[in-house]
Image (cartoon, rainbow, N blue to C red; front, side, top):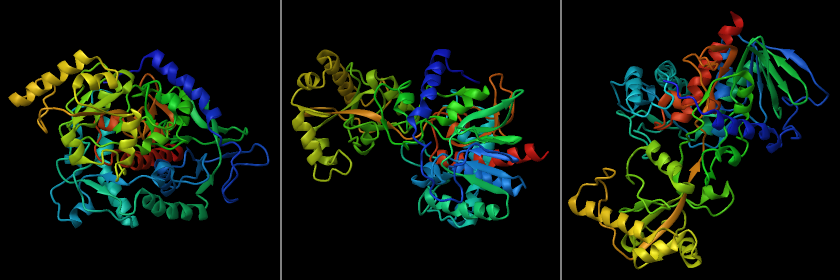
Length: 507
């Protein structure tokens, strides 16, 4: 079932998208080399079978499958090198029935089982599309095998990151040398297609417009007026996790852990095509960051959640099961909290046992400095005193903790069903004032199982395909992601988009 965003919310995004070209200073970038650069001698024009707007992992995978189908491909990338976010990612992928599993003695897994696991994760209600989810799940293992055959090393399979519900079999894999190793293994294939004349690459090139004619997407126009036309266009221009302005439509307080160039170009371009867009009112986030620096600087100030911790909002109310293995659950806790602020409450015993409570603060000096400043870290002997320091209603907070302590006595959390670390919170007390970190955006254009972009009547837009962070990833795995979902999604849907775009162009 499709849940459309409100017109007010969409117009908020549209306004932000309209500012994005001014926000990004790519127009005057100096080319990295003269082998693939933006035009410097005035506008030009050319025709290809497939034009790909973007140069990240999804675009690279789309390029390979399109070129292998015999299509002539142009990549248009606004940065000075290819790879996008994958150049910096840890490199977790997932897929069922893979050669990596077989090499580690894991048998009995199949793509169909992977699909059933994905389908049963329980948070599809947002934007789930079965055709897209099925394509993702059934092609994920094959994509991991493809990368494995290229020479990408993967560590032993496991059930995924601890913040996600585990897969029912070990089918998550960390690239041994990070996601950049994946990029480095794909680039030589593209170089080979360049030598054969099937692929051209244009770097430092900013797509200003999608060219639409009679309802079909037929090419792209750069900001210098150059036009590159093709029967098929793949939109793979990234997300908006690097735009504080765009994230402000969802969050009042948030820090950015994504790339600064991900400011919503894909969404601005999609808006020009009449594409159906969804999921813009939700964003997965990582909890427990301190609002200490600028938007991007905050991503380096991460805290730990010790055992026995209680999360409360600025109204003094508890917000969730603090130890639930459910990424969407925690993301909503921050999204729904006033000012997107959650206080971690714990006691002296937890502070001593789990120090340092700020990641990489090995000598606890930053924790102590904040405590002495009365900033982010607070301590008190009584709950009433702590409430005053964090500016929360003392009666509300005291009642919340008294109720929680009562659950600890009975062994049953009647509010949120917490079962782990159900121990009474008794003083002396500490509080950490936290916000969340967004590294990747979740909303975007809606595609079908062939990576064809759909219009607002849910019909394919002729000539337009999409992949990567420009696509609403929630339609594949819902709000509660699986370990490795984002990189796998980029690779899987990128390959599908390239194949579909080539088939459309060459038919």
